[in-house]
Length: 112
Picture 1 (cartoon, helix red, strand yellow):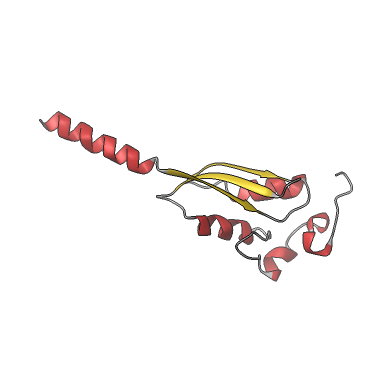
Picture 2 (picture 1 turned 180 degrees about the vertical axis):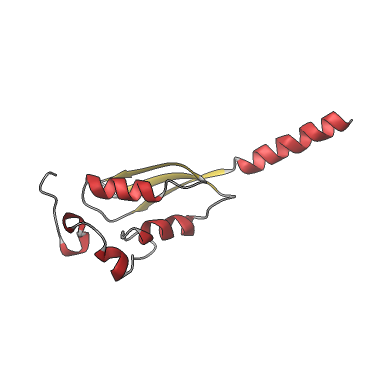
């Protein structure tokens, strides 16, 4: 009986830990450096995979709902200077971007 209760507890704990959700939303950026920065901002516990497409400006994220919310994802991206569908990075955060990554000013990367 003890073993079956322990097994049941472990199964419930594992199932709760693995609850995942997929989010898809627009993130402003221009180039490969932007892609590295955006995806790097989401290299945190709870994010399973993050993929930003520079052509469509769409981000696909699979994350654990027990550790993060979609609002947390937006905040992480804002913190590295990128605007999302849910809001904008602060002027100070945006100012930290490389010159060719200044998407608000219509910048373009020479190598792109």
